[in-house]
Image (tube, rainbow, N blue to C red; front, side, top):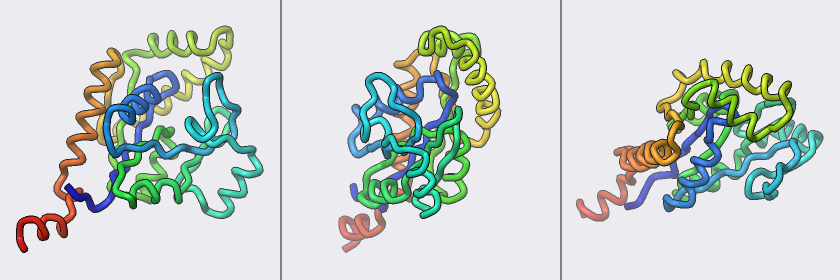
Length: 204
């Protein structure tokens, strides 16, 4: 079935909620879904690949892109800059492929203003205690940093009402089924179907 344009799916949630693992599985399972790789000034983590996880650039390069208005959204998180390139996003969606973004609340709210029609999904941890445990496993012996991230997480979670859907990532398989269902259901919305395709196939 021919679509008018790709759908924008925006996934947000606090660090440690599991949003990255969820969207990566969605891309591996669902056809016609692509991750728009964000730019960042932070250093790569162990196992991250430039161009797959993020495009890693320095702060000067990032600021040049801001000046040239090349970002659809950008924000500063934990002292580092993150941004979504407008050109990359448009290329994916104009080709009829759905784009999925893993971005923070600041960036999501910018996109909501600039690109109406997106689907906004917030990922919550089952509890603050479990979020703390996940961060401790990921960032061993960095207590001060964990406390900072928990404080940011609480502020982010206050914005859940700005989103279309909320998924509580308690059991990963269940959370993924919910994300998959949201993507499939939104693909079947009337406005996603090309009226030209309908005319050509049924009303010649």
